Image 1 (cartoon, helix red, strand yellow):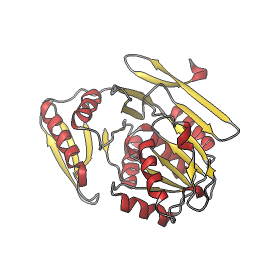
Image 2 (tube, one colour):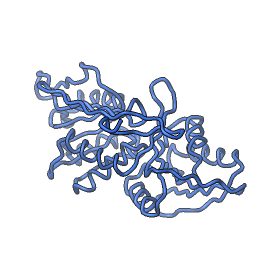
Image 3 (cartoon, one colour):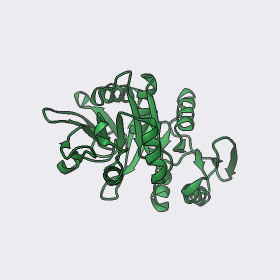
Length: 292
């Protein structure tokens, strides 16, 4: 089942429901270009798709609709505009073959060269990710985590959500791409840990330079979910002081790229944990390095 649902509550509800029924979830980024989205759908060929017709995701839904008609196979699309009322659209065609996946989540993403890569995740890996994320982010009972990225669009986001839910931590995710709303949410929620991408973080730094109430110095942790940061990005100019600060930062590579690599960086230490990608029965599996 494909999920193009950026809303945290609905994403989590669907993820848990499908898992309980023994199905496989494929989180997909609703902000992808039309052809990129169609390529992922063609690769995983889902029987059921949940999509949102809202804001700039109308183009996303159109791509889903066009793909479902083009394959001439039966596909069920659940659509919504407000997350409260869902309608069902059944695209008629020949019955789809039921594939058997030894997986709870299939992660799909494009690397920097535009190559589509996928990875299969089972419960053992999800539990391993839970332990690793807890360690790397140094999660504690008083943490408040802010998500400034499309976190509900890949396997990493799903693992992160389950980890924070398990620890009963506050997790705020901004669905809007309106920067005024984003800044307002950041100030209002006063989170101490931030998860974002490098490009969004650069924009956030620009706003912080001109807004004394947006003090990035108070963040205890900044996690990048897309790639490793350059050294100059680790310096944040405080609005109250000319001194540069260096909060703890982590670059968490996308699950579907070269395995999973996490770096915990501060002035004194560097911890690296790594998994390997293994080709098994015409698909990629992510395995802890001790299980080669």
